[in-house]
Amino acid sequence: MTTPVFDVHARLAPRPGALAALLSTMDRSGIDRAAVCSGGVIDLDRLATQIMTGGHIEDDADNDAVLDACGSSGGRLLPFFFGNPHRGEQPYCEHATRFRGLEISPAVHGVSLTDERTMALVDVAAHAGHPVYVVCLGRPGCGAPDLVALAQTFPNTFFVLGHCGFIGIDLYSVNVVAPHPNIVAETSGSYAGVAHAAVERLGADRVLLGTEYPLQHPEVELTKLRTLRLDAASWEQVTWRNACRLLGEPEHTTTPTAKQAAHV
Image: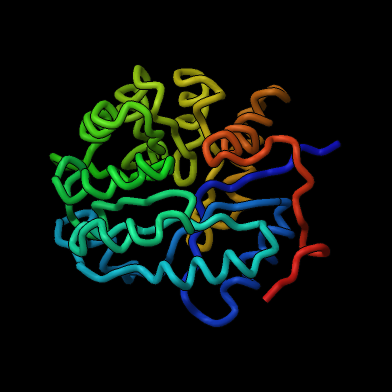
């Protein structure tokens, strides 16, 4: 029996047809389930500029649209809350039971990982039992050492090092988080060599498949993982079992497919 595939990092923009397009792409790529967070929060040109030169926005993500879409996915999609430190933790706190995880992005909102506003959001996640997906940057307050500090403050919460670090060749971040078992790494956007190093240095039980759909096509990320020539057990961990454990989902389950789930 073919092992199912779980994408732990896809995005869903609040626009007509986005849900159908995501599910259709998952079907064509052989992806059974996905954790999704809001997309379209910031224009890509501005995001790239902020990453390179600084700056931030204070706009909120459309978390309600993500909830609605996940509720219409036949159980295939799990919603993450895109936290906005500028708005405080209350919006997340009020609806945490409806979400499955939290994302924090200094690249978007420009608030450091050790800022008290970020800590307040993570505290809600900790009480809700949610994992926290973090997009690090190569600047003080937003890098892998700051993620480690956050993980040490909340030792019972799992943190996801998005993209295996700041840039595609970020072995530095992989090495920094390696001694901390409550930090796992997600592979989208990283070089194949870095993804391989993450498996070797963190262990296959601490690495997860992500795609960053729609910015990246899932087939690109799946092909990258296939080039690593993982043994069958490691492949199952990276592409399915680790995500199930992170999100509290059964590892042995019959997952709805496009033919079984109602598409919108």
